[in-house]
Length: 334
Length: 249
Image 1 (tube, chains in turn yellow, green):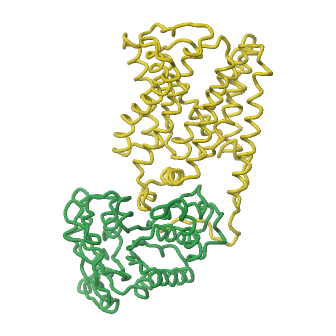
Image 2 (image 1 turned 90 degrees about the vertical axis):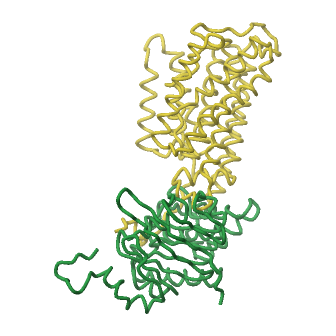
């Protein structure tokens, strides 16, 4: 029952958000800088929403999101620079390369049952390793920015002379990420991911192929972020090894956790709130009180940990009923 | 009577360093039976379960389930073949509701269209409808155990292994659980294999009993035979002849 109610509320909230999001460029439209800020916030929203598949539903604290973003950016960017391939196709390749790399890492990791903190540490290292590799790989990367060919207003090159189309592109990605998320959460895969996220051996004896399920989650996650990476490169107009950003990868995981693991719109909510205030403060007060956004950011984090440890999104959820008092509380066996 | 074999182990052995947790165990379970597996603490009962369900790999020996050699199969494939289990320390999906936890099991044999039917069947069979929306993490131990049995039964197994489902329950809860397991066995023809410390439960429920001690199968037979078996009594209480200095194992 609550399940249904929560679902309806979820749809309502998302619809409300989308309607507002559609009109945002009309409000900020004249100021390109503001549009870029809002787009940045949405990029974090897309990434955190995608992270929710592996980190929220499947419970694997993945800290490699910017590895897939960077791979998507470099694939699409290099294809554009070298072969003049339009980013509209390049971004699909970006997603596929990210998936390929995710499988390359995921298969051995899950084969040897690397999980929990060890999974987090491994994926964390992954971003840094890729950064070094692309710094040294002179043909593709190198320490100097590689600029994408600049054509003002050439849709073929994903160039528009305004940030507004990028805003809608990212918004489109966000809608896709949200749809993928909620479809998975309601399907067999979603139930299997939630189960294995809580206890792998309990899930396995119920017929859950944990390795295959985790790999599928990793594929969805890396593809969505890989495609986003391709758009990211075009928004900024260059590719650079600094795209492989370990610190920001951790931030994506924080957004996913603070928003509410496994709740479709939770990570987005956290991104809007945390990254939103951060960008707002940085833009408005950054010159006078530098670092103020970090104070606000951490205060919000502390408040969430104290009062809503299951995530901000639980504000908007109907609680499950609790058993009557006479039920004996779970006691230790033996 | 049905005497078709459902599970057979031959020379099943598992070593942890110098300790032989399961030592050359040969046993067979027939279709439709309720089997008890007993033994003092550390006898290797749980390890034995882990070996059959694929959670641990044996060092020697074979497990044959319904004519298939499953010795090296992963747990999920064994579950697909028709074997599931519960755990000694209840491993619940704390964040999921009772209904959702059972749904995980029901997906084993049912697609999206049929899964809800199976979930409803399990909720009804184990009388869990009243608590279907509760989170597993909020449940008391006796409900939690029931949910665990229900979600394993929802996978539609032919053989269900129950690892100390009675542990920590009060006498009244135990009786209720026993009658439910009996009913499950009769209605669905699921073969049950029960690891248990609570003698009352084993003796009242099981048709045949296997006794493990220090990894070795020391006795098998019907309950009355087992309760009079000298080796079993020794394993549990120690040897009579040097009663003062002997250990109880």
